[in-house]
Image (cartoon, rainbow, N blue to C red; front, side):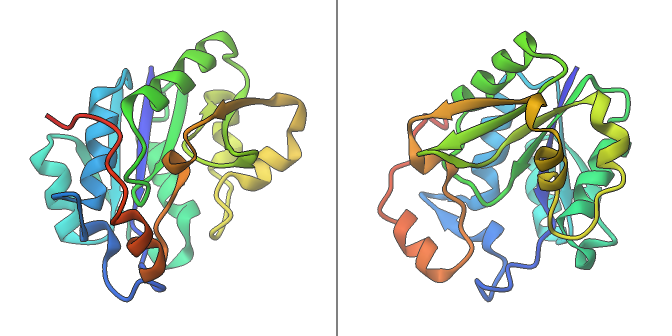
Length: 197
């Protein structure tokens, strides 16, 4: 079983408002990630939230929602909540809720590569740069449960270079995440890359 863990409990400090609820091509930003996850071959989807409004979006799509009471401590707390909730999963895919151009095909490409490398960490590369979503097999669950702050799984990736499987993604915009008003202006001109019907 592969569980998708959508990290949606940040504070959008640079944006000045809850970016996950901002309108992107007719949907709230977090919706695009939820839709992509639901259309993919993920076996289970968890939405880690801080805002009740984000929780409500998850409930509309009938996915499991988990409140993050330690959101101020950084992204790692959301990741650990997801791992604990899905402790028996074979692998965990961590998705950022502020990447509205992620699509089901990308998720499934990573899953397909994981199935060929079940003890490896799967990392997408966009134009040569590491990105997300990443897949960690369950052999790393104890390490994941020890992470702290906003580093997330980066230290685990750095410490295990021989265990990394690089997956090149040639549509760079899929890895684009929105952190500031300037980023939002950039994506306002983009067209969502998949059919949401």
